[in-house]
Image (cartoon, rainbow, N blue to C red; front, side, top):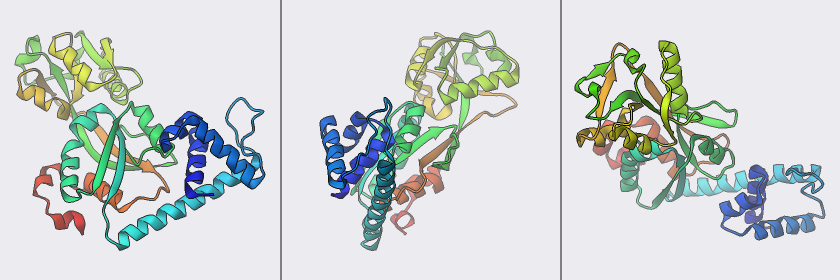
Amino acid sequence: MHIENFKIFSDLVESESFSRAAKLNGITQSAVSQQLRAMEKHFSILIVDRSQKQFRLTREGQKLYASAKEMLYLYDKLNSELQEMKKVISGTIHISTVYSIGLHELPPYVKVFLAKFPEVNIRVEYRRANMVYEDILTNSIDLGLVAYPQKHKQLEILPFHDDILVLVVSPEHPLAKRKSVDIDEVAGQKFIGFEPDIPTRKATDQIFKEANIEAEPVMEFDNVETVKRAVEINAGIAILPQTTVVREEEQGLLKVLKFKNKSYKRPLALIHRKGRVLTPAIKKLIDLLTSKDLNRLEQLSSEELED
C-alpha cells in the first residue's frame, strides 16, 4: 500500500462519494472503486457495507479509516517539519470563499504574499457559503474565507476583519443626493437582496427585524456582483459590504450611503479544519491574513513576513 492509497480512501470516507473522491485526487471514479477493491483484497476484509443504500463502513473499515488518518497526519506532519527545517516556503494553497470576499477582500493580501513568496501557488475557488464549509470539512480545501462564521467542533475559526454594511443606490434614485440615511427609510423601498440561505441575507433580515421594519426583496441573487448590476439599473436598493462597491462608487455607477446613529458590521473569518497539518506556506498566509493591517500591506518588509 502506498500513502496515496490511504489518501484516496480517506477522501472517499469523508465525502461519502466516489465521484468526489475521484475529483479530489485527479483520477476516474472507476479508479477509486478499483483502489477500494484492492485494499479489501490486500487486507482480506470487507471495507464498505454494500448491503446498505447509504455509504457505510464495516467495523473493519472504520478501523482502517482511523489508522489511515493517523498515517496521513504523520506523513503530512513530517513533510511540513522537513520543509520548515529547510526553510522552504513553497507549494500550492487551495482557498475556498464566496465572491464578495474573493473578489474584493482577498486580492491585496494575495498580491503581497506572492511578492514575498513567489514559489507558492494560490488557487481560489468561488463557492456558496455552505459549500465553503463542506470543502473544509471534507479536507478538499486548505483554507476557507467566510462571512458571519458558524461555530463547528471540527473547525478552527480565525478572525479576519469586519466589513461595514452600507446602503447602495443608483445615481438616479431619490436617495442618491443624501450622504446618510436612517435604517427606517429602507422600509417601503424596492429592496434587492441575496438569496435566503446566504449569511449576509440572514444578517440583513435580522437588521430589519430589530428595526421593526419590513423590506421584502423584489429580486434575490446569489452573489454580490449581480446585486450591484441590478442596483445600477435602478431596479432597487441594496445593503452591501462597503468594500464591494468601492470601484462602482469611484466610477459614479453607484451611490453609497452610510447609516445614521448605528454601524452595521459583517465579520469575516478564516477557517480550517482542526487537526489539519499546516504547511509553512499556509502558516505564513494565515499570519498575514489574521495579523496584518490592510493599510500597511504595501509597507511590509520581507523580514516582517519571513521571520
